[in-house]
Length: 303
Image 1: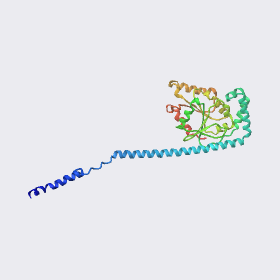
Image 2: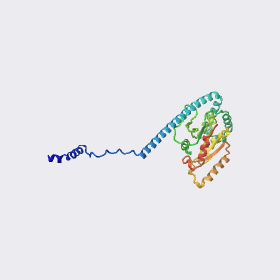
Image 3: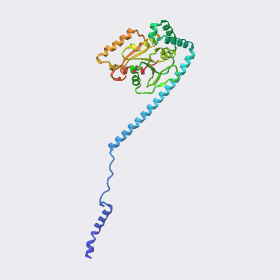
Image 4: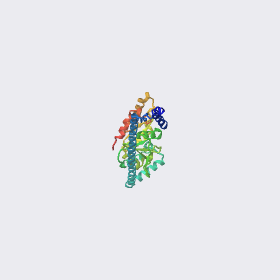
């Protein structure tokens, strides 16, 4: 029995060894600890989620605001169409007189106010008389119109003033060929540039011009690029402002002299209705202090 006594202490050891083989680990091994969450990573994730949520909310607010502005613009365009129709009914006699006069001017190939002024004094007097009789079309809010040829950088100017590229909204079936854009604090109207200036002398256009808050005349090299339309506005007592664009193309050492030359041109031509003159670059707005001054001037305008 001595062998049994010797074997008894070995039995627990054997059991322990068998247990290890079955479980694949020591019986005394402690269970693996669960790794602690990375608190810094969790904080970063929370911050990212917060930013994403704020950005989403901001985008939703912007969309709602833009939709509201678009609805207001659509309503204003509708009202403008109705006002034009009403105006045409109430001023049928003057409209017929102006239409006849403009047709005669086109036949004579007098396509600008300067040409009329030089070659047909009688027609000029009749035009001014009828234009002064035109009543302003009532438009709600701050309405700013931009006159200028495409070569003066008008498209870039429109986008820079609006802060982004926006789709134009047409007025619809009217005698006015204008497009409107909704800005944050104003409606921007694009008056298409054309060689046939007589088309702008209709009673409807003049009534529209009179109803605007601001009228911006865009030039690049010289006031003469648009002096004829300015003389027309002068003749019928409509105020306007001048924007000299593409100042970045003027050599820095020549800019002071160039600005002085523009101001002298205004005096020499004898323009009376000029309000402000801004020297800017729509392509590089931040380079010229007049840009911010101009934007503040336009956004704080009122009839």
